[in-house]
Image 1 (cartoon, rainbow, N blue to C red):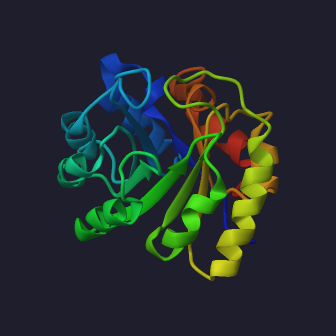
Image 2 (cartoon, helix red, strand yellow; image 1 turned 180 degrees about the horizontal axis):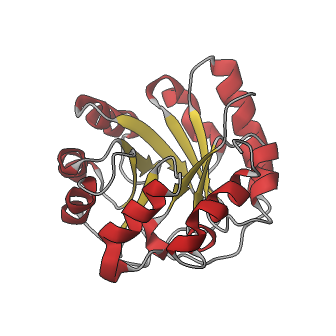
Image 3 (cartoon, one colour; image 1 turned 90 degrees about the vertical axis):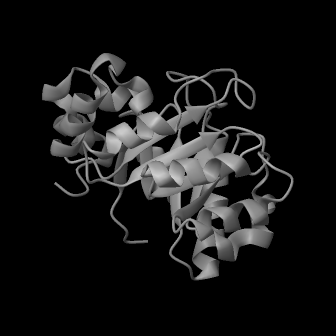
Length: 223
């Protein structure tokens, strides 16, 4: 695998009082995408933001907006986030009764479609829909809150999924989210991840540190 590792800072760790400035700073610092965590207080035990915030952020960066919908049922919300400016829309395998139908809703909006796997979700759920997805997001913490510790059990899941993607012959991103920092990033990169979502580690030290944080998370893969 020779794909460059990309970094998608999670705005969950940003200063929400100046969110537009934070996204601009991350864009200028060399981030590859902006990760937006959407939580409904039902599927996960927290509430964050809705489509209006995504729409507002769209004016502050030309980077892909990587929108992770931790909401259920999810189908009726996909179009709103697509219209707001999301480029990638990721749903959870458990967020609706018909995963294939949900992915087709995302595709019908002209967006890249992702599926997220919680730590306890088996990789086998992806087998029937592997031809329909552009991104697999492995949660290396139980979703709902930032700042949690990385679950080492997910390393083997990443390795399994790396093999699934390679055998499919499709250009599917393998993303990992949860507890990603300067210590855990090398292990997930070695396991085959192509995109790292980082919150606390990416935003540590304020805007003046963002570029260095991104380089360190990549392991200086791109200098």
